[in-house]
Amino acid sequence: MIDGGKGQLSSVIKILETMNLIPPLQVISLAKKREEIFLPGQSQPVTSHPEQPGVQLLRKVRDEAHRFAVTFHRQQRLKKSRHSRLDDIPGLGFQRQKQLLAHFHSIDYIREASIEKLQEVSGIGEALATEIYDYFHPN
Image (cartoon, rainbow, N blue to C red; front, side, top):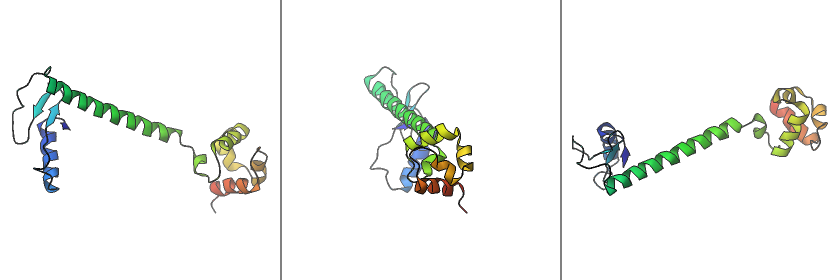
């Protein structure tokens, strides 16, 4: 099932034909405005009523696909918005990130800190301090 009208249906049909998936796959489209159902090769929608059980089922399938896609994209955006440069430093877990930020108050100050200053943070030894320093100073 394709979400859209005749245009979306014919675009998908062309792609599926290039992949040799037509006729094995049967494809229809459901246009949102009037809940019209289109079949390949037909210019007019299938005669139906929006409250018919089959149309209701197609609508529920479409709405569930929308809900799933929207939820997925929100999760992706949230994940990106929560990503910190500190996440990319090997050996630096969430707790130590919190300790560093509590001590230095910003990633900019962490970046400017010397290895000795980084070691002042509880749980940050010489090896991890060097790793953090080297991350921000790759030369």
